[in-house]
Image (tube, rainbow, N blue to C red; front, side, top):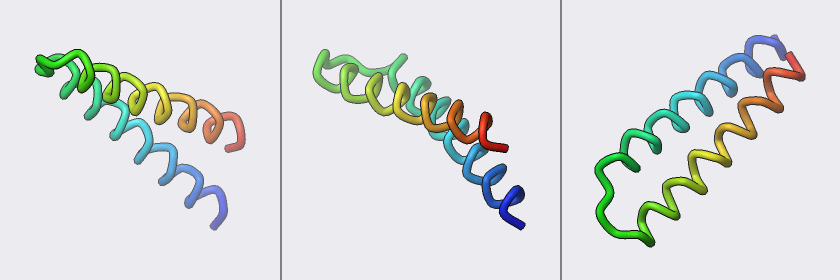
Length: 54
C-alpha cells in the first residue's frame, strides 16, 4: 500500500513539473518565469526523491 501511495505522489510531482514547464514557455514577465522555474525545479526534486524511495 505504501508503495502505491509513493508511486502516486511521484506521478503527481512529475505532472506538476511538466505543467509548470509548459506555463513557463508562455510566460512573459521575468518574475513569473522565475516563480514557475522554481516550482518546476521543486517538483522535479521531489519526484527524484520519491523515485529513489520506491
